[in-house]
Length: 200
Image (cartoon, rainbow, N blue to C red):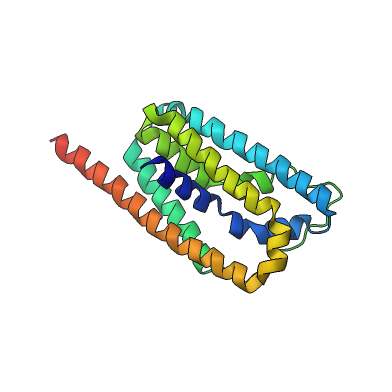
């Protein structure tokens, strides 16, 4: 996987378009300057969390006794489930949280931006080719910049696109993610079968 493919994959997994309704629901009551400040802070926290997982991914896999095929299959399954939810979302309305304090880290930074699928993806990238750490770091940074731009402009996007167009975009990205998830799953199975046959 090259830099561009990894960046696109991570950007889709972070799902900034799908996160817009959640961000709008949780932060819509705040004035625009404060809302932008909160989103910026949560984006920075999410980026740091993903960067830590990217840097320590190989160490984490080693201590947990995990191999790349298992991570590939697990990551593919998780991505597939998340993508299905994007294409076929439930119709439950997101309850508006009337909290005295503003959201901090949870749920915006983690798990909305740096969710399980994004963490699994960065672990998978670094486990496959650990010598390309700076390539994956650049891909993560590029994907984060795209997500940051979309989320910071989420208020404007909600006004311009409208909920129907936004749902269509979310489902389109979900279809792309399904294809990537299936490919990741097949790659994991292929590597496992190759290792099994080679061990005979």
